[in-house]
Length: 122
Image 1 (cartoon, rainbow, N blue to C red):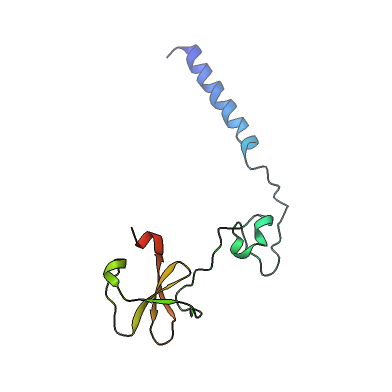
Image 2 (cartoon, rainbow, N blue to C red):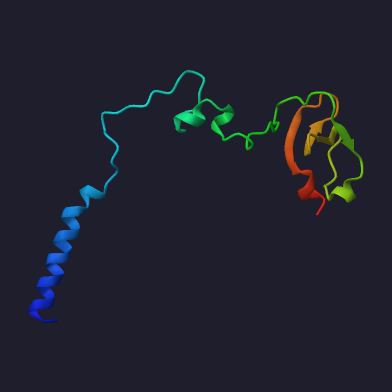
């Protein structure tokens, strides 16, 4: 490497190092966004007021473990058709709002969210 090439390398590294702070995040350190009570933290202000902090159309009620399904669900009895494994006594599969859940038979409390009906039918 020639002296001229070495000098150009040193100058380019020095320029890159001096411009790095200018490329940093432009947010001011003293600006603090306060999350309103009952709203989602870490989301943009426009989505903080939406349920779950998600855009409209993407939030859908999916029941999770320990929640009880409301009435209107349908029991699934043909496990082979749905490609579902057999269950322990006292458990069953139900279809509710285009979702499949494994639930306790006597209380309809969700034990596991299995998936979307269209994915299981493939």
